[in-house]
Amino acid sequence: MIVDKIKKREAQNVKAKKSNVDIPIGKWVKCDNCKEIIYKEKIRENLSICPNCGHYFRMHIGRRLELIIDEGTYKRFDINIETTNPLELEDYPKKLKTLREKTGLDEAVSCGTGNINGEKVVICIMDSGFLMGSMGIVVGEKITYAIEQAIKQKLPLIIFSVSGGARMQEGIISLMQMAKTTSALTKLDEAGLLYISVLTDPTYGGVTASFASLGDIVLAEPHAMIGFAGQRVIEQTIGESLPEGFQTAEFLLEHGFIDKIVERKDLKNILYRLIQFHKSSKDKK
Amino acid sequence: MANKKLTAWEKVEIARNPKRKTSLDYIEAIFDDFMELHGDRNFKDDRAIVCGLASIKGQNFTIIAEQKGRTTKENIERNFGMPNPESYRKAIRFMHQAEKFKRPVITFIDTKGAYPGIGAEERGQGEAIAKSMFEMAKLKVPVIAIVIGEGSSGGALAIGVANKVFMLENAIYSILSPEGYSSILWKDSSRYKEAAEKMKLTAEDLYNLKVIDKIIKEPVGDAEESFKKVVNILKKEIITTIAELSNLSEKEIVQNRYEKFRNMGEYMEV
Image (cartoon, rainbow over all chains, first blue to last red):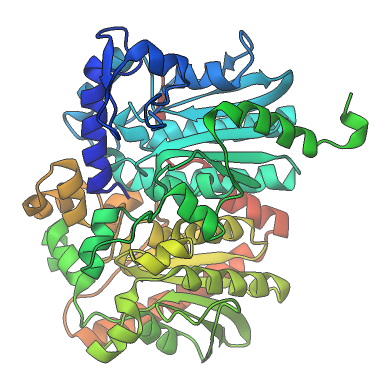
């Protein structure tokens, strides 16, 4: 579930976004990691990575698409849905509306088809700028729909995760999206299709405990924070502080839960090569 | 019935009451025969989930049950019913055997959640829960899940991907605890009672949301009498539901479960 630590980061992130990253106002950014003030364009040119210390800034859907998908090939699925607000929270629809206007996103994930060096794939990209990438009905439905499209069109599936977990505002129904997306993945598996899960900073809770952990191949960006329980919850439960490097991508690699850590600059090529490795020789040109 | 007047928070307190009957109490009372079997064949036997074989009148079942302790000592042994990844991996082992030997699976849900610990993260708590749901979704035998006490978060849902989900009248099932919910959503952990009302975590709410299929009434009055009645209802429901589901082909059993979870959460087209 979403953890306070992440919420704190989210708050920082939102603050940062107001004036900084990937928004064309203000020309300077303070790096979360090295605290250096850096010219924004420099970071953008550098794949949203701090040129001073190598810290990975979170990427918005648009930037991620630019990085991974061949120009002009992305076709967003024509699925336009909104939550029914199952807990009937008064301020939730208003909050969503404000977020949509502010971020230009309709929800915390965008799903469609596109090419990676000419190879057509189904791709889902989450965005931490929309309620911390949390999964409610819409995210669950869109990802499930994308999985079904991958099966229908016999395409590899790639999901870039960034999420605090199941969305609190939709309660138990958010929790059920874990079972929904996971069930859909069993069908993709039976169809013999490739699913590559790419974990980015941060991936937690119900997303880690469902589709994000179920890739045939699981990749992660360097230093991404990935886990089930949040760090503060763990600290409170065990009453001691956590070891250095706990829940980083490197920690998960060491413990056998991801296949490979891939630098941002190499992601597209690694995805392309993995797709090639999963094609039968007769399908290769 | 007096029960109708209970607030959501009062139900939370009932569901958490240390005197409330645990999975093993129900298992021992419902089934004619039960044998617990141990271990995930990989790391250890995590005792927050009990697995084993059971039968009613010659019909065999595989049992997977979250188990809180009935005494302080037992609670420590069972980690207060909070499973580590090994529990889910043990559950997966028993799911596979259930399929191999064509036994229906009955799961009992009663947990505050999967354990948040260093070791649990090192050994892939998230992956274990995801894989447990994944394997459960594929099972070619009928599955019934029964929420008997606290069904909290992914740690509960991990063994909840069933054809039919029953829930005791005073049990709760939720995305996380009301305390956690109010702390995350409102940054104020003292509003847990209000959170409990908002979260729709009672059996009635969940039935209306189509998250569960049946509410098992808990008669008021003498606790032991009430327990006996609940046991009898559960026993009858298990027998009739498994008989119904057994009319389906293996493919239909999987599809039936798939559609149930595929349709979770109504949305609006815009």
